Image (tube, rainbow, N blue to C red):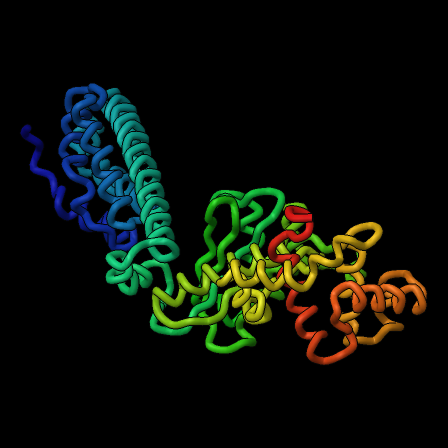
Length: 399
């Protein structure tokens, strides 16, 4: 292609400077093609426009802002205008100037449209690739094998995590599942902004649950994240305080909290602890919303040897099955009594019973099991057996 003797390189350099220092090479052959189109009075051809689609993709891959890219092309076009032969010799043929203006504006419009299309397609592909890489990283971090662990420290840096420091994991389960693109996930992600963990946190989803991986140099960092998350979740019916923040309408919810550990394997261990805390809370029943693995150490030990736990439960509590009404009322009585620290008045009040009725039940338990709930040794055995019964679902599955 031949073009008049025009200062195209200088025009491209000046346009690049005006666009904020964008690489002038992104213009490709735009200027000579535009000069040729004006010279022939024709529109830019498809094959020529295809090159600008590629330029848009290339710019997106380099991280060039779309506004700067469009500015580069439009600045180059208006700088070119005054140098065109049709403009320089305008007095000789005014009609040629009008035609040149129409062709030039049409060519710049077509080029920018295709350029923008290529840029947006590339950005969409890039976002998809980043989302896939993020999902792969999360899967490797939480569930991957030993081979995945070797590269996780370097990969974590790409997502704002420094796994050399202690990290903890919190898992939120709710009636409405969480997804990466859900507004509900965004609300909870914003709820931990401003906490100690904010600068080094990854909020993601796994199997419908929200997973928060964050730096936990001390216990207060974990407490801050829990406070932030609960402030973004619906309050219970008995909560009196008014929440000033927008809450995520997820329905009923519970939070499992893992302990802080160091390194990629520590993150995985903390995730397992958080999941185990949720499972234990479900098996134990009750209305506790935040289940901390550090507060469930005894229960975690008990589920490690289910056979021994089952032997203890059946040996200690099976006689309760013969009571009128079955074992369940007596199990609830023991739970209330132990929760009240062995105070009969408090436990009776919590069960809406008279002290006399509660004392009668405790005596019945002592008669059936041969263990007095008020005596230190038998009390420990009964309390352990009751916890084990809840973990096993006893007597529902065995009574």
